[in-house]
Length: 335
Image (cartoon, rainbow, N blue to C red; front, side):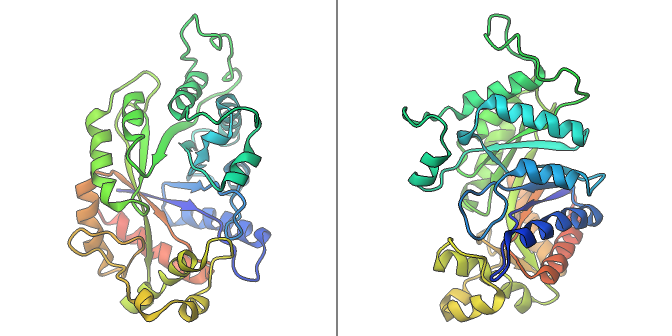
């Protein structure tokens, strides 16, 4: 099956965002070497622990350092932008990396202050028009506005050889129907809401409609936080930094393993990180020998044809080895 990565560009304690971004771009090259199908960059605003604020800039930089792997956004937070701007910028990226660009679309809020600061129009109440924005982007990319539409005269694709592949990302299941109706790819955040993953992806698959501007076939993707090591104890410890971040507050660099060891209680350290009886923890850990047995039932139940892997490790060597093991395990799974 296909396996991909979403990169958060985590900032290490005492480190800088420049270092985090350099590691993120190096990770894109590494992911290509390891056989990952896609490498998406996240969008996080006013967060100390992540350096990935703008996927567009990182996609452009990664395009110059890779040649095969698909590059994309996981996701552009569409509630902060105009559909025109997003479509135009991703068509530009498609020209930089023809046939390799994914436009992952999502919506999320930060704090009321940051959300207000991100807004261009601060005089009116924000509208939840995500479905309309997604359809408008598709209209620009595929010149799909009907003749009477005021934007039918706009041609953003002039001079371009291709268009980016559009995906909708969600973690509540609410956008599964939208992706299905539009005939585009759908990624569910199983690491955020694991109990809804199978239901949301089934809803997407069963409702999928082929459209002239769609992908042609359903593309259900399951996102999971997965770490791996040579032995179970070491793999389990790799889940501690993410736990410590949640427990101690997110407005700081990602804790190191040693910091997490000092901060977490014994009970927090001992919380399970393996899939037991279908219960998926926020972070999944395992070894080359055990990870496959954990993941196969979850993947089959969800009907996913691709897994998007997330991790929150700032130890570069441990992260590299973890991703290598995860790639080997997912590559061995047939669907």
